[in-house]
Amino acid sequence: MSIVSPAPPDPSGRPETPPWTFLTHHARVLLEIAHDPDVRLRAIAAWIGITERTVQNVVNDLHEAGYLTRRRVGRHNHYTLNTELRLRYPTEADLPVRCLIDMFAERDPPGPPPGRRAR
Image 1 (tube, rainbow, N blue to C red):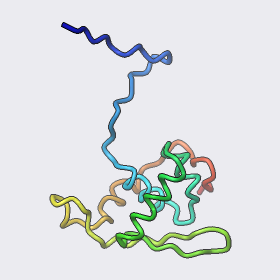
Image 2 (image 1 turned 90 degrees about the horizontal axis):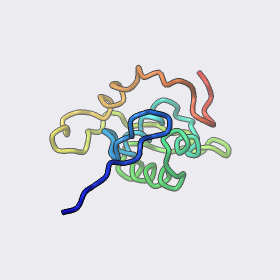
Image 3 (image 1 turned 60 degrees about the horizontal axis):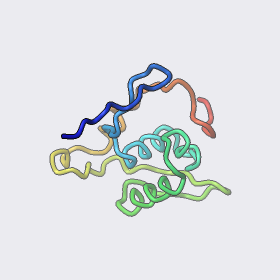
């Protein structure tokens, strides 16, 4: 019989964060671009807590699926979202991605992520 010991407590006293989230990286990147179409991928990576390469892969996925377009503006990209495309999971396939964006549009984070302009 094996005994599993609990994870050591967080020194800050906060409860341990579960290893899963409700939103995928794809949803979080899409929401950050919806919030600021001129955001840099480096800023998204820092804000979400993933690598810049992962953000690049997610943006490529969203672009290939038609959820966003990219336009070069000087040395940066400007993103335009196609908010009328449907969500991909079969049970939500009748809803446009706009519904997801609208659900989080009122979110007011504590401050802009690194590299994002304050509005």
